[in-house]
Length: 125
Image (cartoon, rainbow, N blue to C red; front, side, top):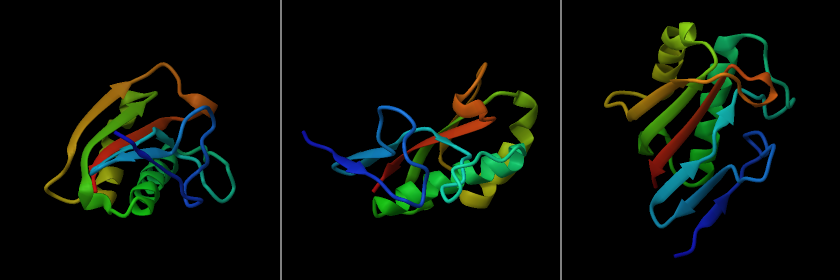
């Protein structure tokens, strides 16, 4: 079974040996997206801004694969500080409407580039 590599300039380029996303038949698997601004390549200092950009980057990748945020079935969120859980919930609601996708949220010791949040998704396109 083959799969298609998904790439868009509307989300940051991969910073390691991975693709932004892969699509196989009807399933899309995004790589984790930090809150990097794809235009500047910079990571804002503010958690909320990083969370908004991380979801925006996931959205851009899903759209590049031919879908939209309603196609997302599962979201995984990685936080360096669980005190930011209420903020990430509010930001997620800006991008995902009810009925919401399944979700997991984990606290991690650190993220690449000093990120505060990383978001990945599985979508059915």
